[in-house]
Amino acid sequence: MNIKVMTAKDVTKKVINKEQLFILDVRNVNDFEEWKIEGENFNYLNIPYFDLLDGVEEIVDKLPTNMDVLVVCAKEGSSVMVAEMLAEKEFSVYYLEGGMKAWSEYLEPVKVGDLNGGGELYQFVRIGKGCLSYMVISNEEAAIIDPTRMIERYISLVEEKGVKISHVFDTHLHADHISGGRRIAEISGAQYWLPPKDATDVTFNYNALEGGNEVKIGNSTINIHALYSPGHTIGSTSFIIDEKYLLSGDILFIDSIGRPDLAGLAEDWVSDLRESLYVRYRELSEELIVLPAHFMMIEELNEDGTVAAKLGTLFAKNHGLNIEDEQEFRKIVTENLPPQPNAYQEIRETNMGKINPDVEQQREMEIGPNRCAVR
Image 1 (cartoon, rainbow, N blue to C red):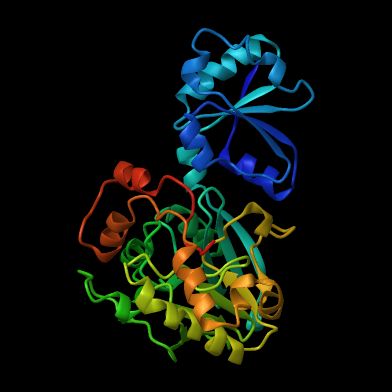
Image 2 (cartoon, helix red, strand yellow; image 1 turned 90 degrees about the horizontal axis):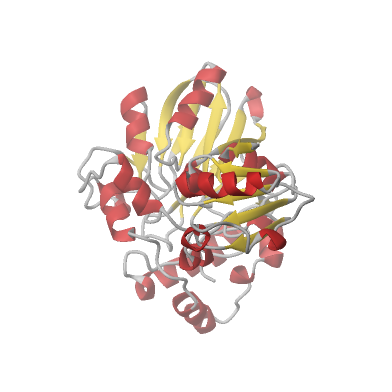
């Protein structure tokens, strides 16, 4: 019996390299339809585990014999049992280590490019959740933007590079995932920045991140320029790094724009969203490379695994940037919204410091797809 294991890192490489993979997902149908592992060349079969308790005979003719089969469940246990049954039928079968919980938490650091003065910019791709965070490195210092709660991945890269974290930023108060910003700042002694208009109810101290702030990283010419860009939240703030990169937070994505309703103020904030995208961003260089805080679809990944595009390209191709009539924009933005993220109110309260769920509770709160964009 030849049962093998595949890690979230292994699957991520297959996604980025557009490799073939057949996934047998043994979660409930509703869970599968709401959120699954996505790959451009992946094929799927969803059969709930309870339908396979008496054996896999009824599905063997639905599985390929010419490619690997990856069995996936929520936490791992069920997939191991199904994989063992398939191995007895001589399939090339793997199970996903840690299940969908591990998939939700995996971060893949991808180098975006070099900066002036010898610095580097990294994008951390949370492949299973669609979250994107960033690290700027220069002259033995690092700044981290929009970190997730899986802070070990950032600490690991910092240690590998031999640099010290000096600044941590959140572009806004997140509602779809728990920020690791404060924890990283506590551990490293870094300064933690948050837009004050998003921080009226927080229970902790922070540096006020406002439009016009300039923060230098290391002793080089690299700087982070903050650009106030409300709409997703009232405090949402973008960053221009090295006059080359635009970190757009949750205002602008590659294939969509940010939703304004996660604090219950869609009607109030839609005008801010339009002004940020149609006025403030129009004043910027179209050569800036947009690096968002989320991606919606796996097709948004570039060949190298990054999620990035020139601002001029998005002005030409992103439908959300090409709605001339203001009333039509308002209608689309307020009526074409996906379901709100799971436990988003609890996630906001966690990011405010009002509640302190344990690790397992945090995992449960974050399970599910990214839902930060207008459809």
